[in-house]
Image (tube, rainbow, N blue to C red):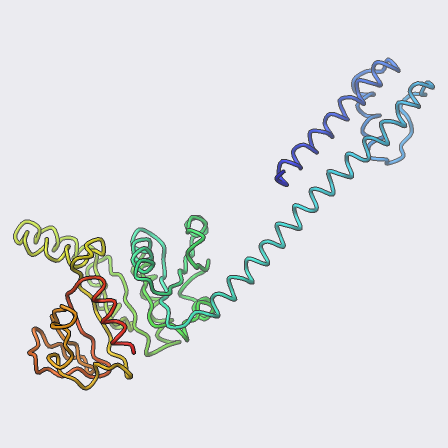
Length: 331
């Protein structure tokens, strides 16, 4: 039986005892409702007040039975209530300790500031990848609706203590999608103050906010309205292009996906050309572009283009082959 059900039954038992006691005094002693109720309450509470009227022999026996049964009922109810209270507090403490332990384990993770409409989508995409991430949400009502499967902290992401608790010193990147541009600027400034080298993507809602966020230290600024408007225009003017982009960016289409792959220092691909790597011949992967370690992007690279550690390959291919490429790139 659930603790809440036990408590409800115990409270109902107390009410039942009061009703029985009141009815008993009215029937045995002939007292009025107020006197009978008063006598019942002082008997159950054992406060030791005088009897409202002299008791008959039957009334005394009834009072003894009422005290024995009623006190036992009240004591049991208090015990159950205390257990529920302590269990709830203990659960909160244990839950907090578990959360802190899981956060301390995080490394090379992403911090998502805000769990609104955009934050939910970002969390969904990160979970599908999957990549480790943590959410910071200030609004308590929104925080309570975050699924238990998502690691989350309730707090203001523009405060240093909250970002430190989220493991910003070990994070790989931060996404700021708070409800206002001002909040995103403050979050970016605080994050850059703690980690000047951190890669930060921030959302801009209003015109002119992009430059403010870039000056604050954001690595990249995304405007949902600009992207949405451009997407709608392209859907009319370049429908085939939009269909292709949707095909290679939606993970449901396992036959063809576009992916970004980082070449690790120990990768067997490092030091080879695209032709020597055999990506096309062995894995059937098309290299669309190579972003060199110095930030230069080379589109439609030739077969003689070299692959070095730190380069990022923008590739097209099937899901299984991309997984094999990621294994080669990180080995």
